[in-house]
Image (cartoon, rainbow, N blue to C red):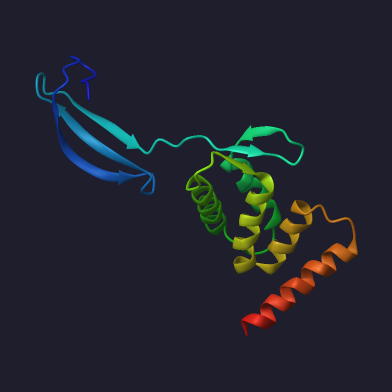
Length: 155
């Protein structure tokens, strides 16, 4: 690590601690030549994920866009924003762990639905109605019946 003052390459680490909820490491360093102290951050390099939309268009995965969609589905449902942040973080982690750098929007939607099913049935239905492009009452009834069957099997 190069000193920002004298550009000397040798320094020592004075302190290391986790930062950004464990997503990076903050290090306090001291230059061995001039004694200047400075802070560095180390992060895991994340390779961008490309999302393949239903239309065939491609765009870079945007966690903020996903979070906004989930927040919209959970409006007035009593689910806290921190729970939704964790949901999006989990989905993003699952997508990042895949070998492929491309994922379809359908797969992302399914991951979100899997998490929402455990959090709130109402939010699940609301998200599913947009994600699955419900056309009418029959679509809602089909998803409700699937939820009832899943609940009966788990009891």
